[in-house]
Image (cartoon, rainbow, N blue to C red; front, side, top):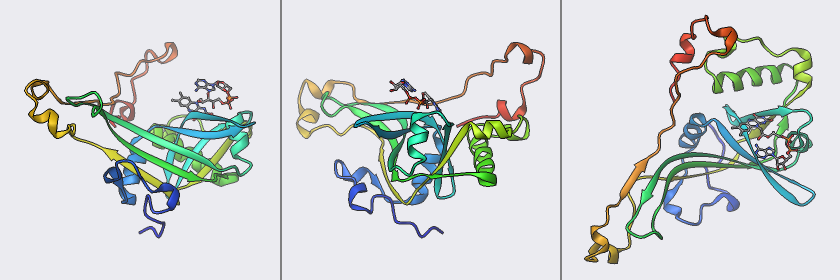
Length: 221
Ligand SMILES: Cc1cc2nc3c(=O)[nH]c(=O)nc-3n(C[C@H](O)[C@H](O)[C@H](O)COP(=O)(O)OP(=O)(O)OC[C@H]3O[C@@H](n4cnc5c(N)ncnc54)[C@H](O)[C@@H]3O)c2cc1C
């Protein structure tokens, strides 16, 4: 049982637009984070904002990200710079009777905070957790990082203390006038789900005669 504040409970994470879509349940937030693969992470350099997509994993009450020691994003954040990390799961296109009310179904988590540099044994454990989260079963199979590979890597942990969650689901919400309008009420409306799925694994040349591991064929998300 976490003692961390509920999502959306700080002034700057309170969802304002379509506040009814805000979720205050931390378990729900973690389920969204655990279902995603890619986060968008912000950094400002010389007054220019950059938003960079990276792989991530939740590790307890933190999100782990990693990148090259030469990366601008990671070098900057490693100095204790605040950031904003967002994870978006796109669930569908919502077709309302008006273009104005048409939208998307989604689940989003936004995290505000300052990452901490993860080093030593903790870095190795965090990187293995990251790999295992992105590619379940792989850490028991693939070679683990060498000292020089760790040196070339910056690993960061962003605390999940200050987060917000917004979820949009279901059919469109048309304006009442369109629902009774003789023309607009006869327009098809609803939503089209978008489902992320894994395709069939494709071996590289060297692995052509090696059976695909069971942990790969069993991947579902
Ligand atoms: C799905 C996905 C997962 C990724 N996972 C990771 C990860 O876990 N760790 C990691 O380090 N990197 C990851 N990357 C790559 C990451 O987005 C950056 O390209 C990388 O971190 C570059 O870092 P940098 O600081 O050297 O680049 P910068 O010096 O910041 O980049 C210089 C310029 O290159 C352009 N640029 C950089 N990256 C991108 C991009 N992705 N798309 C378009 N233009 C770009 C921008 O114009 C930028 O200003 C991932 C990318 C994708 C799409």
